Image 1 (tube, one colour):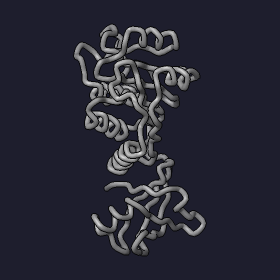
Image 2 (cartoon, rainbow, N blue to C red):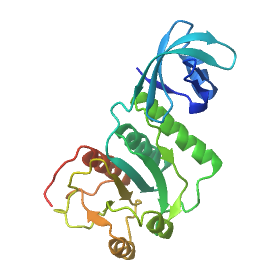
Image 3 (cartoon, rainbow, N blue to C red):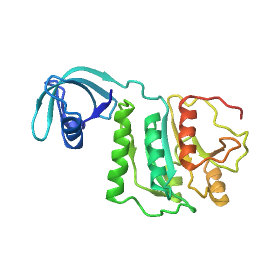
Length: 244
């Protein structure tokens, strides 16, 4: 069963009612053909979950009674801030953000590095498309937190916005293969950086080290960026204590 998303402004806790509008309304009413009396589960994307019964459907919105409220079900204690270079193949980049959202990342920021081929900021069309992919992944995986999609940062901007975080990991194909992700990351923020198809330059890795980034490996195999992002997120969220 999917979760459906509505913004906090559409929720009336005083009268225990909420409404669903926009694309989510169209999906529920036109595609799934939900009707009055049906029960659905809705999240505001801010950790709250509402079990609801549909009480009315108009041409533009669905009205629901809130039956039960839960909070923060199954969201990870670790808040992964995923920084990932945009990939030349858009399908692969979209795969990465979709699967990392399903796994439980906290937010997603595209990064422009030396070997990133797409060096422009995200335009409105791309922001809308990527945000839609993230929303769909939240619904499908029954998450109650909607990760924030930030616009692209340059490498220098990345160093600046992450300078106050204590736990920072960059995955680097030429690092020592015994240097694996390890540690107990509970109740903490962790920055995870994934590079482009061409990897990072040695200058970038040196700069990251100077800024207290830990350089880690996923082993002997050379993985595509989208694969590396999914595997890295999985390892962190499952607290795998691998050999240092």
